Image (tube, rainbow, N blue to C red):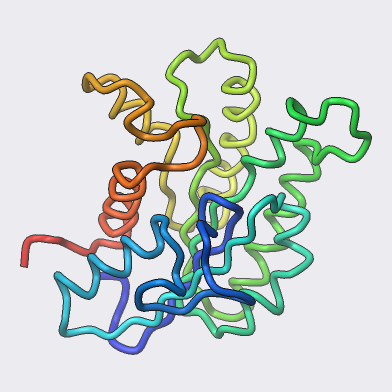
Length: 217
């Protein structure tokens, strides 16, 4: 188990993480953590491992790109003195290319990598363990235009996880496996991005497993 009693885990991200969390950041249990995967994670951890007391912090902000997260990382993440930082950012970096194609300030793949390096290195400087999670679209068609671009940004996360020897979770593959098991993506999300309760449960469980936390107590 990679969390111990009195540890702090901060989930840093965008609306997928946010999901109505309290401001300036949500601290559990219950409503302050929002309605997404951080709350489900905290619920599962407290239900199955009452022997450890972990401070769960939701530092997601809806609409954020990696550029935004980089700008607020010191105040919203580092200031919480995390033992573990779980980072999932990049969906909006990609999405803005499609829903606001005329914008001139899109986050390029090169900038995305630079932003992620700054975030990772700052976390390591503070002694935090890092979990990097890929951005995604709940789409199993690899030829979908947004899926192709998302895979490029996800490849950066995979590369950096190997380079910095961090924990890694391929969230894109999590959804693809679920879809291939026989369920349509509408079970996971109404817009292919924001997880339903089912999606949030699957993601929270995957994070727990990546942190070597069992649910069989």
